[in-house]
Image (cartoon, rainbow, N blue to C red):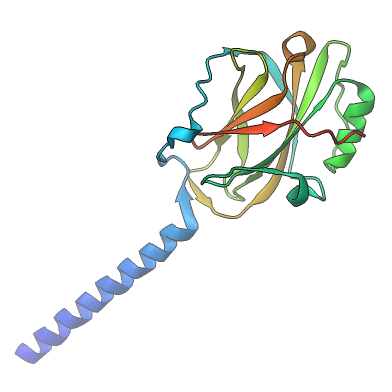
Length: 196
């Protein structure tokens, strides 16, 4: 009887260790999107701006063919990768639309009153992004875009996504860069010229 108990305890302990090991591997590949992440001091950009009225005119699972060659990548972890392009007229908009490889029909944009910003990102395949609050930095030289994950448990794959955001020309005229906030991490992304 003692031998049976000893074997049962050993089997139970081995089962518990196996289960703990599987759970550990599971957590490495799937990250909860609502889990707070530590914020690094270098990420603090002191964004004190105002919310602006914007419209997402397009969102599609596309990126430029040469995205890996022209992207902006954070120098410190997490190493997010982005690209941002500004178009101020119909010709630039059409070139950027083609460059980012959109398959949908081009939306109507009044370029006499509005500029557009193409923002390319990688997202989780199970938790696609939406744009959250959009604001201007206090000096008016940066468009600040918050990315919001739509899922609760996100795979760590990197799927393409490009947003096209429309903004009034008066508010847009001084913008020189985009600040993207992802998982409480702020990243400065210079504007790329893809229309030449």
